[in-house]
Image (tube, rainbow over all chains, first blue to last red; front, side, top):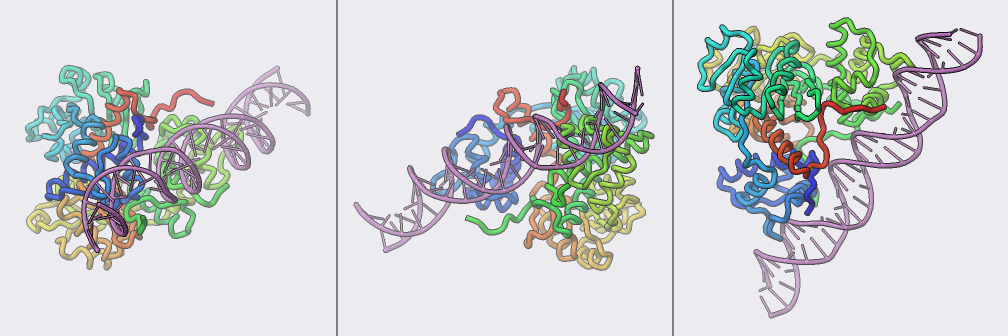
Length: 225
Length: 225
DNA sequence: CCATCTCTGTGAAAAAAATCACAAAAAATT
DNA sequence: AATTTTTTGTGATTTTTTTCACAGAGATGG
């Protein structure tokens, strides 16, 4: 057991957590590492290694208890810590996210939305309180919001990030068409480029065809063990 | 120069391409590797290495010509290859994507949308032709669609993936709350979990606080060179 | 036009991550 | 109760990726 966890393992463990939630809902009681691996497109070795970073939890010759593994990941990654979130930018994407149930009643509850267009704010019907963007820093600070989603147009993204960070946000998911940065580097930022994902897919396909790609990650690891 | 490109480099090169597009629009003529690195949150060394996989293109002591580097990436990653795309699932997220201009007039043009709810299809106003889900395999095949976005509820996701793959799709971006798999492993799949990104952020923040994270990736690499 | 300065490109080195291989422990079977 | 089978957990190994360090090519400036 190792108390220092590599970032790729943390990310996979989060995926495993989601899988355990689903398996538990489906009434599955036990899983084996190759099952988890197949579901996540990762080898069983990696699965076991990842889990072992959190300490021993499996049953020799009898796999993992789904509920126990779920709680184990939950506890060790600190997922029991609830945090408030907000969405900056209420265009189509921001609205879509506001409609996801998980964003409203999950552990990272969206408790505020922001948009620069007051007319837009007045038109939207939602249970989440909405505010004009100029109040962003103030509201984020007052409400103790730690996580933010940026869904504004590219030109506004960095300025919005600055305001969120000024309000004390610690983590940002950015959907704008530009990588946003934090001055201090202390804020975690995950940039997601929805259209760019198509570009990446296309590039990987091209290179796969011409055999100039070193390795293709992804599901379906094939036979092993 | 090396003709075999690691996958992480391909992904970073796609980000560089996006950056070059933006710089070109802003009238910037030249960039240096540390500039690119700062924008993308990557060290200048890695930037240079990534670019060098595509052959020499920079000017010694004078950085990279923005337009030239953009075209270079474009050509070498085969981004000049146009592909048709579709969106399966026209809930809020699917509709939001259908409204993005890039998805309508970019290189990976969305030319079909699918939803299982015919009433929903009739209500939507869009320039993209929409079809009921049961025709998915047929339409994908007939239209020569190679890329697909899955934005359906979790229970339907794998079945939708199967239909898309049966129609000949080669790459999938999946937003459903479950990792979808391709039977053969020949189809590239990128699973994106929007809510899960909040979970990852929270976990990384927790571990960063307790100093049990090995390394935090992300923007702001700090001083170097 | 010579000296200096700058920045790329890339082999070499280091670091990180994934995979392997197997001991050990528990379950299943005989 | 002993034997076989199964599957975890983890050091050791291999592979992959990143970082380093510097040669070399060209720009800059006196």
